[in-house]
Amino acid sequence: MTTLRDPIRVGNVELKNRLVLPPVCIDKAVNGEVNDIIVNHYDMMTRTGCIGLVIMEHCYVLQNGKASEGQISVSRDSDIEGLKRVVDVVHRNGSKIFCQINHCGSSGDPKITGEPLMGPSSALNLSPGAKTRLHPEPMNMDQMDDIKAAFTTAAVRVKMAGFDGVEIHAAHGYLLNEFYSPLTNKRNDLYTGKNIMGRVRFIREIIQSVRTAVGPEFCISLRFGASDYKQGGSMDAEAVRACDVFIRAGVNLLDISGGMCGFVNPSNRQPGYFSDITETIKANVGVPVVLTGGIRTPEFANQMLAEYKADLIGVARQQIKDPNWAARAMQA
Ligand SMILES: Cc1cc2nc3c(=O)[nH]c(=O)nc-3n(C[C@H](O)[C@H](O)[C@H](O)COP(=O)(O)O)c2cc1C
Image (cartoon, rainbow, N blue to C red; front, top):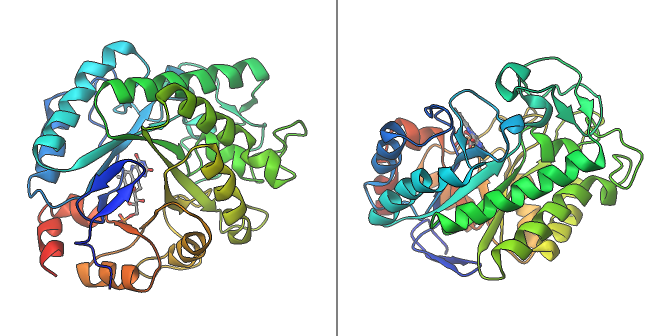
């Protein structure tokens, strides 16, 4: 029976166990730069040596995609040195680390982005993380090309900083998720919100562009807001088809979470509240799947693995509260 203690291979990366510290934004950067508080946080989180994979909090790929004042930047070459400090401390503690890259889209706040908000269309972003209730400006092709290029150069910086992989953020109502969700994508062009191939197109193009730039060996994860759990939103039943497209584009790991509902599931508050959808995705795709959400005990995490709900388990808030959670989990 598979347990948290079992190793797993993700792309070309060997993880010593199946416990993930998912991305949690601690919002401590000043001017986007990594500082001692951030390095110490990741040191403290991994000091037990018991976490297989850390996914570092979302970092902005462009100033106009910055989600919060204290968010870390991956938008400049000068960010690489600071990011390396986090990689070094986590590697020294014996864990692998990916870096999550993001553009906030219309979840942001013009006071932070410095520009009017952008989105696939002018529809309001009603995700729990959205900072304003302003209608975004619909993006044109030039803006979309800039964002694709920004994700691509950010991924190259992540590789240069020594991370074991990059995670593209397409969940929780941020820009890439907005293209996937019919609630925010009202476009009528090739990226149309009216059919699944239009909705996945921008995410697919970004994955392909990142894959070309980082080469075939570097690990790419996708945090995918697989369902909105809202009337008129994206649905569970479509997720496998979307994941299939993303895998063919170059994804090695699917890190499943919510879409326009954020990181909680409004229709299920039980521990492991995304396990129905991860179970279906895992049964139908050929890359490992991470389940995160509401998991509190190592016993329950092991149960999820034993029941084939996922290949890896993410535990965010419990581990942030108690950095010894991972050590206990390895003994369970
Ligand atoms: C304060 C906070 C910050 C978060 N920051 C991020 C983030 O940067 N990127 C992301 O994909 N998810 C983020 N999340 C969501 C977590 O990765 C995770 O999915 C969520 O906390 C549910 O898991 P849990 O029940 O184990 O805490 C954040 C969650 C919290 C509570």
